[in-house]
Length: 455
Image 1 (cartoon, rainbow, N blue to C red):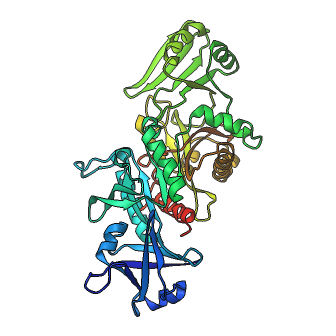
Image 2: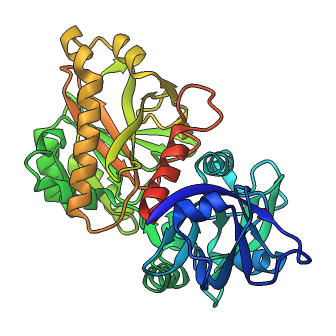
């Protein structure tokens, strides 16, 4: 199979028959494309039988306007191309679909909500790599799965009809949407009917992650003691062993609903709970009294109870680290970025949504009081931990992931701990600390899509 990169251009109907295409002689020779018989032209799920004719010295592919219309191809698009002689198929792409939770054409500044800037970065990254991306919401999925009404960028966000893509990145923000019958049916059908690759298929529950990783001896040093909170005995045992524990909603996000329980010197227990309005404190005379309050919450929310750690702090504020890892152009896990997140005033969680701020790893460690020897090796050890956790998770959970946000912490001795793994890492919160126009995470995602689709 041979590969190249070409520029797709529109050719007027007066100069080119309907189902014929023109390619430059050099490309025909390089890709070994026959001109004495019909071949298949493919783009995503679209497939059309065509005849190839010489376009002379041009380095472009030229199509009849009606073929553009039926295929979803657009003029002036730069795409990779490969020819499979065994199948007789000339394939253009990759065509990438990003499934998002919202699109509002009236909101010109943020039509996709908080990920709007990132969506535009994906468009730019695709242009540099010979790929094409569109964005669609669950309500854009129709009964004809071979085509989608989707949103693309062409001097502004516009709707158009496209074939089902080669690769889908699931960026849905809610489990309700993700688990809806229409979305589940769509993902199953495009995989089986068109060979579409779908990655980051689902949200990860906290209990699911720690149970999956707990049996891996190599990863156990990173794991704080952690259980699904089922009853009072679990709470009692953990509070007896640790002076501080955390209750984290199994399906929580952005640090909302986390409860910190601290055993006081007089035998009472203090809770601090995060909410959108801020942090609330409350004191209980006994653990049993505390549990009676929590048990009311447990009727609607499942909690993971986790060992409290003596983490590094900067001016009394907790610090943790978000490692963003991606499958790269070779299909292997690689670390794209690691940033430090510092909790805001009166907060014990570091999420930016809760008033936290970002810092470089180097600056955060230098301000934290970590021993020099541990500080010098912390960053490479974090990278190693992130890669080992991503690899271990992939082996333990039979789902397809191409991007993970791995939250790590460093205690006062320099030991590295895993706090959480996020399969839908925020694109507004965890940007690198520079003003690059295209974030490395957008570039990595396109590279992985090319890998998956063979481009």
